[in-house]
Length: 213
Ligand code: FES
Ligand code: FES
Image (cartoon, rainbow, N blue to C red):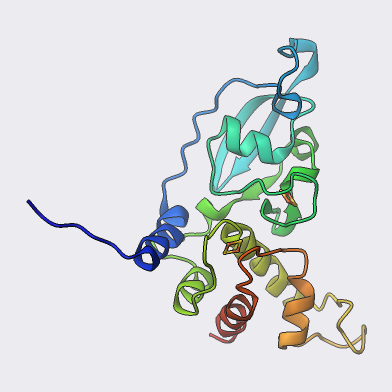
């Protein structure tokens, strides 16, 4: 019998890449009262039809009007790469991209996004290739438990795009000048994404290298 043994580090590295490489399963489950677990089942009057493009695929969903976008992605579309940390906008674990901009999906209702294009960690792989940020995170050991990693990577995509578009941050010396991809800027722009394992130096190094490649 083949002896298959992996170190913890090898197992996590596989997870960081396969999470993003997984085929997105977009067979929606029925709407649930996910925003109010434990309360009575919602009635149809509390549901709405929402059309989304999720990771490049069109999907039409019946959603509970009270459901956050995070819950709809995880519970109805089974896209569990996006994590629920605090569920109150404080940790960034639920960061996704909506029409190219990063948002905390736990803080927004799914019904607000009819017609929107959504990208989750499962959708950043192109042509079977992991995203440069994913490769940089693996190279720089930008994670330990990996729970914050999908949110960190989606947030970093948004942060680098903001720098590219000249959006100033609190760390920008001159709001009228084009921001630079300095460590100071990256740290400020990623400050909404917490890492309980404290992998910040490696996360920043991964983002800077990815931006320069
Ligand atoms: Fe959304 Fe923490 S789960 S910010
Ligand atoms: Fe564990 Fe960030 S790697 S929370």
